[in-house]
Length: 420
Image (cartoon, rainbow, N blue to C red; front, top):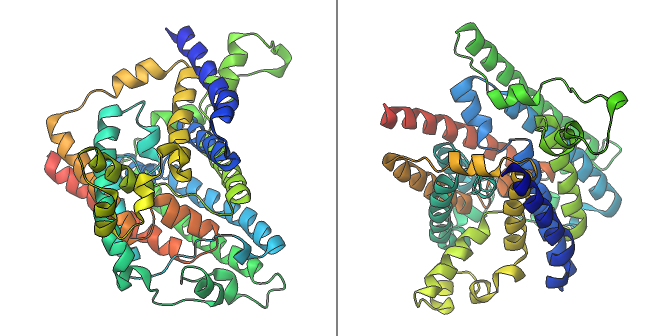
């Protein structure tokens, strides 16, 4: 079975890299598919996701993922600063999100739902092949939450107007662009902004270390088996290298990436995404559009959907594979499947993920709807309101991060209560 899986995996790679090019007449759509596939592969092979940043810390005491996220934020911000310094920030569609009550409430709700469903906006896609019932239930209710949140996002001033802003922020989405505060640093504010981001990341990392140390001292640290596997010393020896050998195949296609390897891969892909599309990584808005498309199957018109959501009717009428973010999200699913297949893990992972209890259905549904609704209040999810804004040197992402962490902690305590 493992051999067949690997063959199917390489066939899928061929389909994505070669055959799909002939399907997508628009080069940008093809690029979106490739970028999404790279994201999905990286997330799956590094066994990483934003949901784990809180859940792993709360349940196992490990804060490695949280610290790795700070590393990823910083190196991506450095790359983005270089792009903006060369071409000008406003030549890109940078996401300088508003800082307001919507951001805080949305971040809290997103963190709450993220921890309940054990996945995030992108993680729900990578989890479909390895935790199908959980991910599918979450995805359905995530879409419902986004759909219900559209009208508020489109009309509420407390979601769209920022408490404070800056010069470039006023020209974009109304938030704070950190380089505006450091215009005298000799690099148009980018040096000062990057140093501030480094300080923010160092503070989060410092408290992460303190928390992990406390868990170790209180014998509450268990760690994760996958993190131990990721950090195992490399057994691959160059002196014994043979191109066609089981050891070589395992090294290049099976062995999990470390968290830092995954972070570097995602940072590079993010840079490619910025270069190709002039915009950052978003994932959640299409879920609400997909939910609307499902309603259309039951006779609801696109005009009725548009009237309720204050979104253009054309978004609901646009074919799935002509919507850029939908194509990218599809690629994320494909990338996760490719890793599991080529690693010979698909069948085992899929079967293991089929186990689900009745009470968990309600928990995952609640997680999905709170996540989805939260994304509309915060104008984005863990990538659209957290990763991309921080990488685009926006202050808003740090507010979202704190609210998300608080929501995740409350969610874990709530889950303990209802599971006890």
